[in-house]
Length: 186
Image 1 (cartoon, helix red, strand yellow):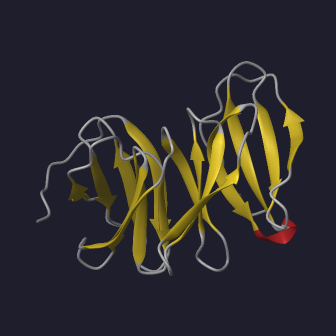
Image 2 (image 1 turned 90 degrees about the horizontal axis):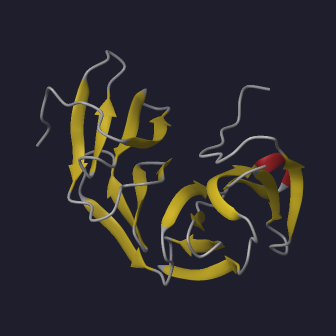
C-alpha cells in the first residue's frame, strides 16, 4: 500500500538499498518509513511505529528499524514483517550491522550499546556504560570496531572494539550533539 504525495516530517535516519538505489527515511513526525526511488518519487513504505522510527538499517533484503525498546525487521520486497525483538533498552536510536548481519544499536537514554542477532533472535547488552550519550553508530570493518558519535557539549567520537566491547575515545570534538555518522569513499 504505497501512497504518493508523501512529505518529510521529522526525518531522523536514512539508509540506501544499493541494489535498487532506493533510499529509506525514518520519518518520526508521521511514524513511517518513506522510500525515495532513484527517480525522486517519495512513497510511504512502512507505517505503524509507536516511537520513531529512529535508526534504520538496510541489511541484504531486509530493513531494520529502532522503535522504542524494539528492533523490527521488514522485507524490502513488500514491507512484510520478518523480525521483531524487544530489549530492555530505554530508547534505541542508532543502528548498524557487522559483516555477519549482527545488529548493534545505541540506547540513547540508557547509555548502552545492544547487540542483536536476527539469525537466532537473541540480544544482549554489548556495552553496559558508554559514559557519554550514544547516538549515531556505524560498523568499521577495517578496524573491527564500532564508531559511535555522542550527544552533549564537546561531543565525543567513540571506538568500540568488537573483540572485547572495550570503549575508547577516538576524538573529543568542539561540537555539540552529534546525531549521526557515515563512512565516506575514503
